[in-house]
Image 1: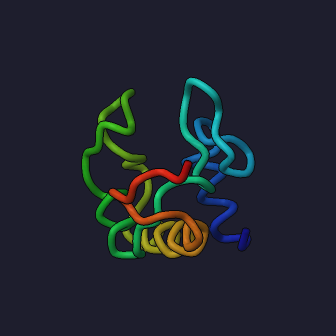
Image 2 (image 1 turned 135 degrees about the horizontal axis):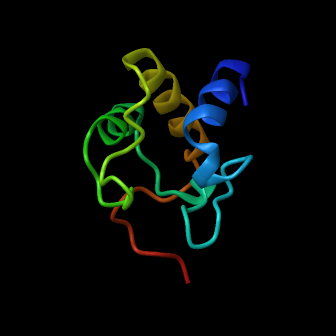
Image 3 (image 1 turned 30 degrees about the vertical axis):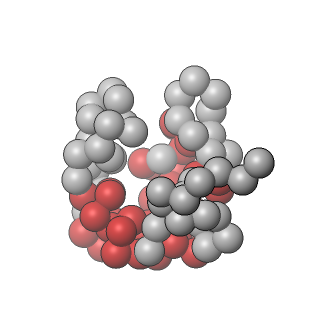
Length: 91
């Protein structure tokens, strides 16, 4: 994880998604197993309300525009090998 991403992740994501994004059972899912989204889709997701963040119904609003772009780029790369959103699960 690049240093800039690590700092943003530590401040904004780690408390729910865990030290390495592997998730915390009953709190937040494993980001490494999230369905693939493009960088643009991650940016939209990180900017807008979404039921995946049940505490506030919004993603971490404490990310500024530059931080959203940095995290979206990282998450796009992290989920490259995951199935796209809406694809059926593998059995």
